[in-house]
Length: 493
Image (cartoon, rainbow, N blue to C red):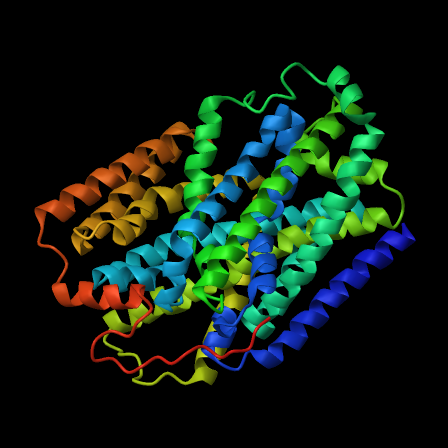
């Protein structure tokens, strides 16, 4: 195991070093939160693919492949479809808004207090997303270092919090590019073909595996529909995803780079399912499907390669964890805390000091990183935690966000009613029907839509001046009477 230890240790030290180097580039709020809005197509594609494919996509994707066969790819497949839809339909307009959070977009579109409630819902989602990836560290550290679960969570979580707090989005972007390459080599180039060969190839796997394992629909139509509803639509509105869109240098980079990342996700989905199927063929009676990834890595890979593949798995988890962590901190600091200060009678300064903005967001990352580590030590079900996050996101925010982008008549009253009604319906049904039940997101989304339409039509339309400002921003123009924003710096990555 000495070589595997060396590979993993070298990888972790390298990630910390890259994060420290990125600290030098985080001199302003824009640099710290959205990498100065300067990413070119290569870095944008790599970091977008890295942030959406985390521990649940890797560990969970292999688990579903082990349990259901090829149709287990649908969870990650739905993520890829969502990223494709976002990139083709919305990302160019989102990038032109030049905001920092989804809640800022809602305030710009509807005016008034839309940001506080949406900020709370988005904060819960991003924090739970960080927790799910932090939980998954234990599966890698346990296989390689044989350390207690809590220690694995603390070690992995501390590394992510450290480099995220040092350089913000610049550090995360640079480390994500490293992680994207390691993940691609480790999972797609090494683990996938080695696992299939060790299982005897597809012909022998077909003989060993249960009936239906080579069907794309054996997981069930209702489950597939739920995956699409939760993950595909969740990709359209998540703060962690939008914050990456905000890093694009141009709207074309956001559109084409995101499309390439979406295609990569589809390939990754199939790879995870096939690896799970190979594991089932080799080890058909594992006590828990959650251990499928760790089992195949531990038992079939040669020394050195094992360390690289485990580093690849760790890459997937760290990418999503760091993206979710900075998203959670951004929402907490800019949408919740700043709004509460205003409501408490403490107006924000007329001109925010960049140094203070960076410092406050850095402190938020450290504080929320500590919270995510503690929560991850107390929970152990990645899929359930991720389902809670996406149920709240889709049930509470999908309708007002897409409604704001697509329906001019939607207004603030409709948005608030939609968020409150949809969120409460999701929470109530998760308590009564169970976290993994389909009803919470089905009925939550329906209630949210009805509330949005009814409240919007029953009240006065959004003020014409607010809509005019929104129209100009959506077109990438300054609002009438506003100072020119100026172009983004031309530094490309």
